[in-house]
Length: 342
Image (cartoon, rainbow, N blue to C red; front, side, top):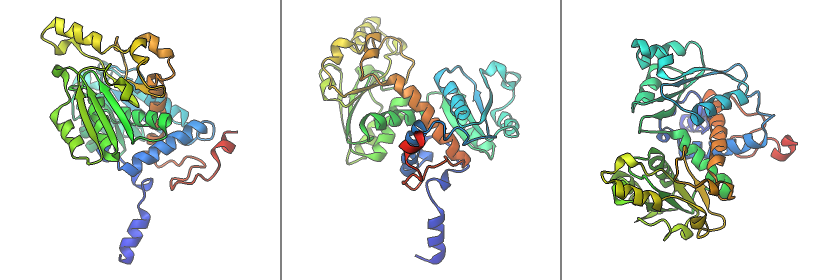
């Protein structure tokens, strides 16, 4: 290696390469950067007070062109907990888009006020357009049925906190596997890390798209099986990722009612599952998980909400280049987590 190449290598790191980066899809992040975010989230959770001024003086704009509860509040709370401030809108009717302003012009205006933008938009590709319009980091908070990268980061963080790893797992995904963007993104990302057995549980009407199946097939260390019956496989799973079976996807209401009941997770089905199985759901739920399951220690879907905030905290400070006090991005924290927390 030449001297200049060696210098370039030494100047490049997952942490440094984050600075100023927009995150439209998780393809924008390397596996090393995702692992860094997971470590940062764990560190943040153990050191809430220590990191509370990490982003002092920073401002995030949350530009939500469609309704959202968890995602918008999570992005905003993440910045507030890091010491920064928030501006933005929740609903296109509250923005100049209602007067005909383009996304690019809105972003170029907002860029003068803030350091980072989180955007949700009903049209696929809107976040990419936004990221090309400005020189500050743009984070995709969901664009139509396309991508929702920070939800997948929340899912990964939940697996990490439950199992201490995000691979060497048997992951069941149940319900609407055709249109569920969170399911597709999670499968693709887990394939990048490898060593995952996927159990795809759905009716024929809502099977996993071929391009997602092909992604699993391309990964030598990953396997998959497609089944229709949740009960027959629930005892084999480390993780059960539930989604809603949507009535509007069916031509025959009788088929919908039959399949809907099949995919309702309740106490009876949970008795067949492993004692340490984790139940995930991107939320909001309708009736696909009985409220009786909420008190089961295996229910991890509200834990996902907390983990989503932690991962957004990690992501926001990373793209801004604001270092967490005491955190060593190279793997050895400068201070002991327990000592700092005390």
